[in-house]
Image (cartoon, rainbow, N blue to C red; front, side, top):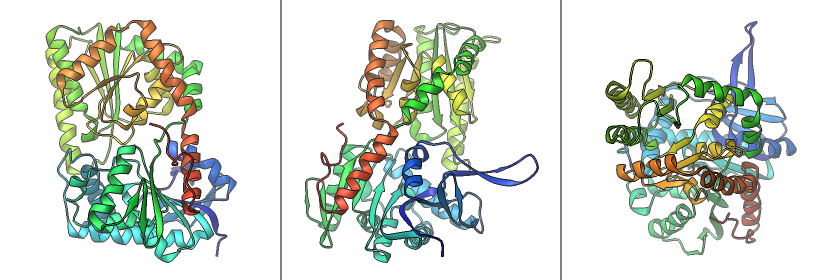
Length: 476
C-alpha cells in the first residue's frame, strides 16, 4: 500500500488536466486555479494527497505523483456523472443555494447516486489519510463526505469549505434529504463559508432542523463541537499583478483597444455562462442606456465573455439562446457596419488574454444575482496597477463585503444597474484611482494563501477544542 498522507484535499475535480504531447503520449499537467495555487505549498510540504475525479467516465487512472502532490483519482461512470454531478449537484443543489434563481429539480435517483459517489470519495480519503491527518473537503458536490469519513475514521481532523452561498433556512428546508445533508456537514470539525451570514444560517439551521444546541458559532453534536465561520476566498494577488505588468500583456491590452476602435469607454463582463451571473439583465441595462442616448455606440462598447459551462444541462442551453438573442437585438438596433455595440465571446481564454482584457477595460461589470464570492471582481482590481478603472459590483456577490469602493448595485433593479454604470463611466480619474488603491491594499493582505492559512489554523484549533484567533474568522 502507498504511503499515507498527513494532509488530504477532497474535491470533485483533481487539479490536473490530461494532455496529449505532439508525439501522441498522454501526460498530466497541473491545471491553473486559485485553490491549487493556495494549497500547492501545503500539499508539497506535507507530502499531501488530492482526491478527485480526473474527468472522463469509466475506470480511473492509477494514483500518481505530480509536482510534489500525490494524485488519487476517483472514477465516475457516465450514469453517475449525469445523476450525481449534472443532476443532484447542478440541477438541485446549485440553484437552491443560489436563492432558487432557477427552480431546483428534485429526483430520488439523483440523491441515491449523490450518496453513493460521496461514499466513494469518503472511502478513498479514509484509505489514504495517515493517523490523525487533516482532511479538507471542498464544496457542494461532497456535502455528505465529512460525516461518512468521520464514521470510517474518527481520528481525523475534518474541515469543509463551501465555495458557493449557503441559503436561508426557508430555502434549505425545501431539500428532500435536508437532514442528511446537514448531518453530512456536521461531520466536520470546522465548516467554512464565504460570508458571515451564511455561517449564521448554518448554525441556526442546526437548531431548527435537528434541535442541536449552539453557542456563538459553535454547535454541539454527539458530544463534540463543530465550529462554523466565514473565510472569504481570494486570488493569488501577486501573480495577477505580475501578469498585468508583463509587457506582452500591456501590449495586447493596447491591441484590444485598437481592435475595438479606440472607444472612450470599454465595458467588460467575464462570466461562466450561468443563470446566476445576471448576464442577460446587464445586457438589457446597456441596451436601455443606448436607447436613452446616455451611451453612444463608438464612444462606448461592451465586451461580454461568457465561458461555456454545463452545456448538457437544459437551463444552460436556454440561457445561451436568451443571451445570444439579446446581443443580436442590441447590435441589430444600435450597431453600425463594422462597429457592433456588443462583442459577445462564447469561448474560454487563457489567463494572459483575460489579464489583457482587464487592463484594457475602463469598467468591469460583475452583476450576479447571487454569488458565493466572484473572483473575477478581485482579478480585475489586482490587474489595474495605478491606472484607475471602475468596478460595478452586485450587492449579492460575496466580494461586495470586501470591495466596498466599487460601484455597488442591486442587479434585480435595472435602473439601479444603469445608475451604477453611469456613475462609473462619469467618475473622475482621481476618484477611480483612490477607490482602486483601497481595494488593492485589501487584496494584498487578503490573498488566497492567507485564506488557506487562516482556514487551516482555525481547523487545527477547532479539532483541539481551542478558540481560533479571532473566532477563526476574517473580519468582514
